[in-house]
Length: 213
Image 1: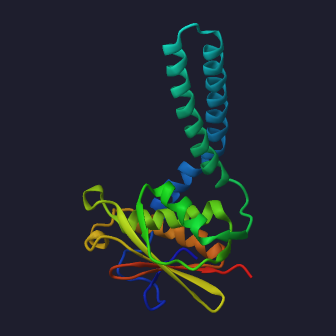
Image 2: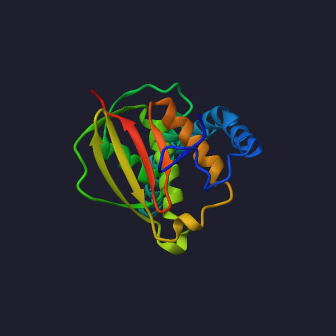
Image 3: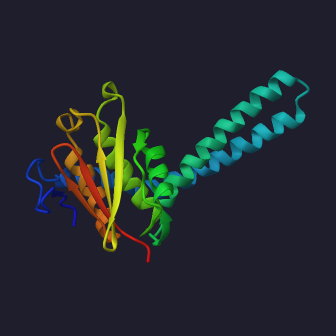
């Protein structure tokens, strides 16, 4: 369930199998997330209330402007936290527009995405986990910062599935990080759980997702 496939649909031999130690290290980090999310949300709420009080009590326009700017940043942090907290909840599959899914994934990965004409379709997935899985793949496809962090996405429908093809810079697949197999295993787990699939080629990643009917 965590073994990603090659372009022929066979277990990928281009990359080393995911290591149990690497997966458990990531799981250990994940096990801390629910309580961490709760603690951070509480602190952010207190900080937002304090900033609102500063704005209300201050007679200085400069101070109010500074507090407002800080408030915007805190709200942005809260939005990021909310997206991460959604991963810890039980997945709930629902129709999601392809454009929405790819936008969420690109935002999470910090990758600039160029798309060809995408079909206007919906996929039947749990948005938080699948957006995260695609974000992981986008991050790997984009390669290191020196390559520009740009990827091109094309998509087409085939029977009851949507096929997403992700191509990054020419040398990106030769510079995958040491833990690439481990994070691909986690992305594969999320995709497989939703009835999808991840395949790895010499110059691209291919993701298959079920269309919403």
